[in-house]
Image (cartoon, rainbow, N blue to C red):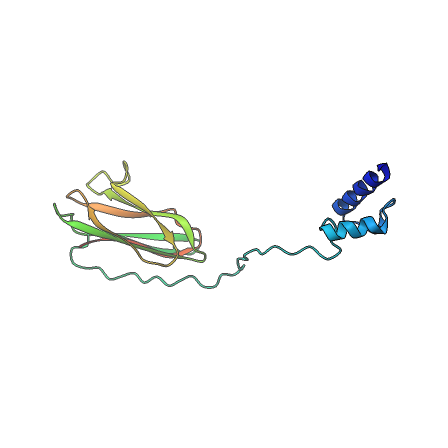
Amino acid sequence: MRQHVAGSRAVALAVLLGVGAAAVAGCTSSESQAAAETGWFSPGPAPTPEVPLTPIDPGPPPVVTVPAPVAGEVARVVVTRQGAGKAFHNVPGVPVAAGRTYTVEVACAAGRPSTGTSYAVYDAAPGTWGHGEPLYSQPFPCDGAVQRTVHLGLPPGRVQIDIRGLPGDAVTAYALIRPE
């Protein structure tokens, strides 16, 4: 009994160390065969796990086409790659009309799809730009798809829209507010 326990320990040690069970001192061929039959010891190579692979070069980013302005547009921002940085072009529109609802349209293209990008609508009354909390904000993916937020009510007056959290490899992005 004592020799069998020592033999089993040797087989377990051989499995952990990757050594063939027959090469372990004190093992009999019947112990090696029993270990192989129970799945303790497999003389073949270990299976490779299935892992999704991300290509190193994802290819060109999707093309995002910035729509032309329309009558009644409240605000827009267009972001383009400029050298190693980005150029933001803010275009003010008409003031928000009381009782009217609006649609926000956004899109972003980058070398790799990402999350963490958002847009924010701010009050654009004189002296307020860049101060205070946004009136409204919403995350959106930077994946080339156009996203829309509809039926958005905004306070009357001037507003501005901004894009935050752009990925480093973003090539084009825009956000605009249009009447419905």
